Image 1 (cartoon, rainbow, N blue to C red):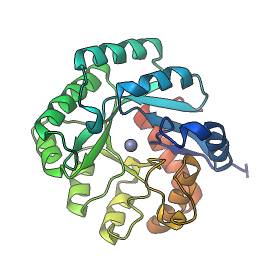
Image 2: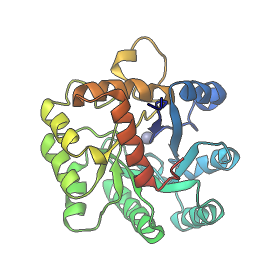
Image 3: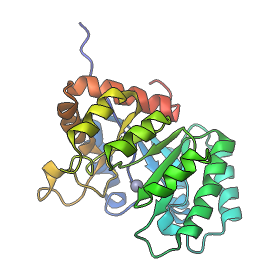
Length: 265
Ligand SMILES: [Zn+2]
């Protein structure tokens, strides 16, 4: 039997955010030790595109470009769109998605404005044939509507998914992926959710959303979340699904490779 090392992909990590950006070397070294072979770094604002340019050569990092609902103010979309198109032309193998984009009812920006910008980015992703990384907080009804009318289509991942089984099943049936991290490991995720995820496990991606959402087992022990913790997330999820860590790693890594169309190795 060939001994295979554990291989994980963190499908959502904000390495460009503080304090990860100041500790990048250590953070990447720790992730390698934990078996994290690839990390997807979503940009949330054009202000981060400079960081992207200086770090894009880092091996094992892949990027998504987009404007998050928290950054919609003062965004000159035609200009940002041109920037994104130019960057993708220059780096087609490193930019693997449009994101992080979405809708958030807790922000002090009008949902109409958020929706307008979101739909422009949905259109761009479709044109470029890239998957979307979606942020949703409190806007399930709007996404539901967009999916029903066919405006929002897969491939797209609802990252840091949290929600009722009926919403989860709807997304799976419509062909969407979900990203699970620290949020899902909290108590509100019930056994029905886990049964659905087991049934649709080919749509599951693992993520940390670091530096946010420290997984519950680490609360009080660590100051901030980081990519290496995707292993702890994987351990908890494997237990919930009743499969081995190795099996979960294999499934979710393959899922991420397929979803983001990454190279096999
Ligand atoms: Zn995020």
